Length: 114
Length: 109
Image (cartoon, rainbow over the protein chains, first blue to last red):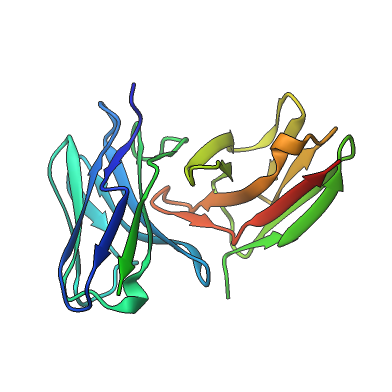
């Protein structure tokens, strides 16, 4: 079991460019979460999928951010027209089932917007 | 205000001593999870509790949903325990895991 896999580990973009972050949840896990970590805000919930369907995106900035889960083996977080304030570590997590206990986190993608 | 208030924000311990981290919740939470960030920045699961207490080695955690708090006790601290510890709580719908801001633990000889 390789755990939750996130790619790339580091991404550097210029202001205004697009960034796509990838997450491969643990096989068989039906719930996938995206979080963002910054020094100022700590860990913030962004969005959550269950069986590939978006359930709660209340933490997503309304503009420029979008997340998809086209199949059960991967999810993407896309940030359009990146801004310096988007710089953060983006974490993906999965759990076996909704309402099910332990979340397993990937190592994260460090996004730096110059 | 924050739903999960974690304290202290920083903690210094000498080897062999112990202390407790605490998270207070402003609403009723279904469960709590404690994590430690490792040297690679990954979040390592320490405990998941829906109630009661759990113990693993020198770590022990408790969760009281009614009283709205959880604790993580560390005893006989070792140098390798140094790092950042996070608590996180599941809301009533198990939809979200809300994190505290973390405790930076430094264990010194």
